[in-house]
Structures are given as structure tokens and as C-alpha cells.
Image 1 (cartoon, helix red, strand yellow):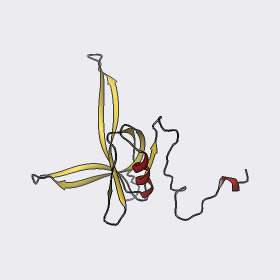
Image 2 (cartoon, helix red, strand yellow):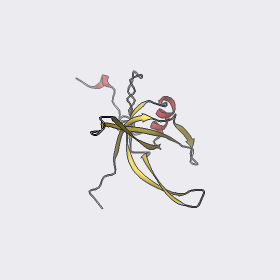
Image 3 (tube, helix red, strand yellow):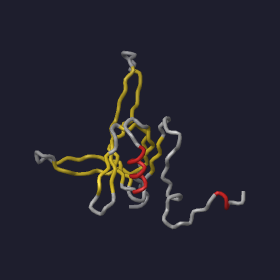
Image 4 (cartoon, one colour):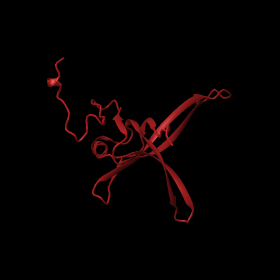
Length: 143
């Protein structure tokens, strides 16, 4: 079916230090939880209410796995762009379960560290990190 899009953009805080595990093919996968929150004032009680959603982030992109492994820590603010995937599994009691993950695959996805404690912005941009070697230095641009 054409004309569809599976894209998720989240800005939130890392809930725990990322976990990086090796895969059978020798590559690595990074995973962590990301919290997004919204708040509002209850009209009846005039009390401030906050709702937090937790998202499981799974990263297969080698560049982003290294970025996460070396720079991302609990409570940091991140911009995440990936795809939503549902994983089906069976718990120890034999009950079927579903879990939803935000996946940054090997060739899709973006992660930007927004944490103000960092002086640099880290970004995966496919045009900057391709394997074709056709990058140009700023010195060679005539303007």
C-alpha cells in the first residue's frame, strides 16, 4: 500500500543509562527508556497534573549506537526520530504479550542530544555519514 508513513518523533528524558548488547552478526544494539511528559491544570481542583509516558528506544544504527554508548546518560534530554514497531512475545506464564518499541534501524532514524549540560550537538545525518566518500570540505566551497 503506498501513501503511508511510519515515523515517530519524541523529545524526552532518558530514564536509565543505555544498555548496549552485541548481536550474533558482531554489530551492537543500544536500548533505553525515554520519558515524555505533559501537564495541565485540573479545572475542578485547580491542581497541576502531570502525565508521563515511557517509550522503549531500540537503536541498530552503528553510528548512533556508538554515540549513545559514549555520550548518553540517565536524565539527558534527547530528540529521537524513528519508527514504531510492535513486538509479540510470550511471558513466563505462557501468556501472549505485545510491547511497542521506537526503532532506529541501520539506515533510518535520528538522535540529537539536546541536554544543555553538553556544549555540542550530536546528530546523525545520512548525508554526512554515508559510505560513498563524496563529502566536501568547507574549504573547497567557493563562497
